[in-house]
Image 1: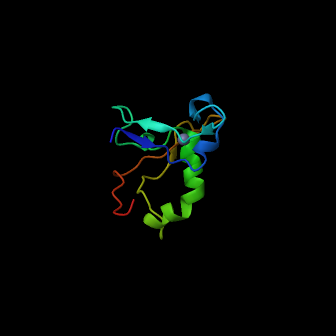
Image 2: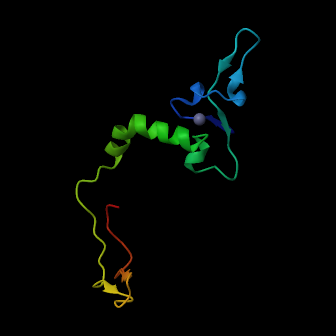
Length: 107
Ligand SMILES: [Zn+2]
């Protein structure tokens, strides 16, 4: 298959000329077809035509999406004691250094 239909639940309701299909007197707004290219293959942009459609999908299905990988406990990243880079400054800058790369088993 060299294309996918956009999975945005409201894609077919957006009034844009490129979505208009059908014969005169029988026009419809149709879900966008997404061509698979080297730029979108293997990414969410192979199944969503826009940020809006991507967001609409998540807002509609977020409970099912979260059920796939629920977070039941907080994750932690070990750090060194934070220190001020410029303690005398009016706008001191805190520096926070990670001890190791985050290797939690349930990211
Ligand atoms: Zn779309």
